[in-house]
Every structure is written in C-alpha cells, then in structure tokens.
Length: 480
Image (cartoon, rainbow, N blue to C red; front, side, top):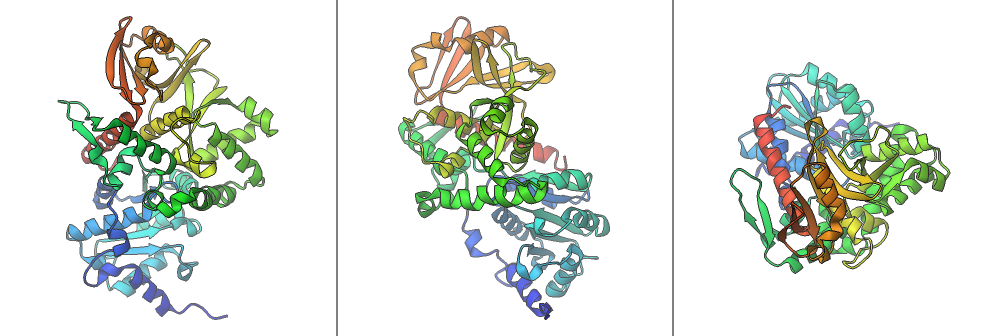
C-alpha cells in the first residue's frame, strides 16, 4: 500500500498558509467578512506569553471559529509578527490523517523554514478533535515547547469542553464563541445604525430604535435566521434553513459527536428528546413529565440533557421561589435553545403574531445573557405566580428581575403584572423591567417602578453591553 508522499503534505501546508508569501494576507474569502467583536477578547489570550497555556476555542458548529482564527492571524500580521512565524493546520484534512502534533511542528519547520524550538511561533490547529487523544498531545506540546503558542479549535463542542476541563488543567485556557447576539447580527448586516446609543455616565449604554417597527422586522428575522453568520448572509440558505442548520449543525451533533463521545446507543431516543425540548423552549418542564411521555428513564434523560448542554445546543435554568430562594430538589426547570433560530430550522419560521412568539422572544433574551458566561440567572415560579428572569447576587440576594412580554397591553394594565409586583415587594426591589413590543415608558405602581422597554431594544442593549464588559475584564485580567 502506498503512503501519502510528504511533498504533497508540504504543498498542502503552504496552500493553507498563504500569508507566508506576498501579499502576506489571509484568504480573501475570509478577509471580506467583518470580524466578530469576540476578536478583541480572543486576541489578548493568543498574544499573552507570560503564562504557558494553549488557547482552546470552543463553540457550536458553524458560528465562525475558523473565520475568527484567520481574523486573529490577520491581526497578528498587522501587529508585526513575521508571516512565517504563524502556522495554521486544518487537522481534519485527509492528508493529515494520523499525524501527531509533534509531526505537525516538524512539517511546519520544513515547509516554513522556521525553527520553532528557538523562534517564538503561533501555531493554530483547527478542528483538533479529529486527532485522537488530542488533549494529551496538546498538553505535552505546551510542556515541551516554550516558544510555541498553540491555539486549538474544534466543532465537536462537547468533546472539547469535556476533555479540556479534565486533561488540560493549568495548561489550557478555554474560550467560548457562541451564536450571534442581536447586536452582532445587525452589525454584520450593517444595520446597527437603526438604533441610537445613549451613553450614561458610569453606566452601561442604552439604545433606542429610530423606528421601532423596522427594528422589530429585523428582530423577527433574527429570531428565525440570526444565529449563524452563513445563514444571516445567505438568502438561499434562508429559503431552506433546515437543510443547513439541521443537517450541518444539529444532526452532526446528535448523530455523530454525542454518540461517539458518550457511547450513546439509542440515537433516536436522543433525537426525540432534543426535538421535544426545542419545541418547548422557554417552557417549564420536569424529568418526571419527560420520562412519562417518552418512556425513557429519568436518569437517562438527565444525562441526555447534560450532553445537549455540553454541546451548546441548550441551556437549562433553575427555579427560585417568590422570595428568591432556590429549591433543594430541582424537580422543575426551564430549557432554552442556545439560539432561537434553531427552532425555525427544526420546524418552520415564526411570524410576529404566532402564539409561540412570546416564548421565542424569551429564548432570545436569555440567549443574549448566556453570552456573559457563567451567569446566576434563574426564573421565579411559585403557586400563584412567576417571573421570567431573575438575577441573584452574593448571598442569593435578588439583584434584578425582568418580565418578558411581546405585547404593549400591560403598559395600560399594570395591575395584570401582579406576579412581578409581588416578587418586587417580597425582595425589596424598587424596580422591575418589562419588555414590550413597541412601547418605552416608566410608570410607578404601588411603590414599584415598572420600566417598559421594547424587547428588540433590550436584546440589542444586553448583547452590546456584555461584549463591552468582557473587553474591560479581559484587558484587566488577560490570563484569567
């Protein structure tokens, strides 16, 4: 049996590293894309050499990890890093099958003419999960080669998260690239000027729509198609989102990534559960109910939910009572899709007047907050009421609460918001936010200020401020 000639591998490496020769640029198919704001958070981790760690870029399929890597390479070039000190490998290419990371470095040295043992280099391993025991190899590389700054990425998100936490303690820095926020979505389409920024002294920015009806049209489009850059920019994909999102993102996770990682035998069972959860996004559910409806044991369902969450397809949110106290047993909880556009891909596009619109708006709002990383977010539910979004601070004190609505009628009927009012009185909150469809106004009712804000404006504002807050944190604490 013939082996793949080394010269073919070296030729492939040179093709992937176009910037080694003039004009020292990344592929034009990528350079034409606008960088996501996450580049400003990702780049300091790459450039920091004070602590020897590999950067592991994680995230769902098709959110732009490869594009982010190349934008980072472009920035390194702009910052004066010699082109041949930057190496990139798409590990999933057939020519690289069976190569170890050490072998990649040797080939990099031969193809680029750079001695990585003596000269500082940046080496990017894209789709690293295709290398067996990648986490062991990567840890060894970090320990053995102080001049190599290794950056790895992969689309098998669950495998990357699990293995980086278990095997890379002290050697890996994880970086999550989530689906698009509403702010990023509008920026990508160059429509961010639909809102006016009001900068508050020593506070977060507030955004107001120039025309709320036009903004809501874009918001509806975001709910249906806005999670993935390729979908946002392709009308052809939008005509059949299921073909792209479901086949290339969801099915590959459910049918390949999770079964191979966790040894799941009954794929149909897993697929049924995910479809059920997706259809009921933002609804309260229980293991008991899911087990009864599906005939699957509760422990099995619990494991499946953990797997789906590890793969960034869903997020679970726990319940608190009227006083903001957590329940000792999590018998009930909510499950949210990590991005609302997944629902459209699985079922059908939603319209502004559909009965499920309220739950999809709630899903969108939660998905903006999920970009903040580990957030102490909950929902309130008790015998006679509920509140959609609750934030707890130190000592489990309630910091703030939000009622998510897709209607303007509560502006004139505040008394109907008695659950939110009672929650505020129980937790000494002087204010609660309520999202609307178009109305923005503040009203005081029974010593509580109700701040009514359009849901689309709120989503944009949250996404913008979270990314700005992260930037500040990264600058102050670049290696944490």
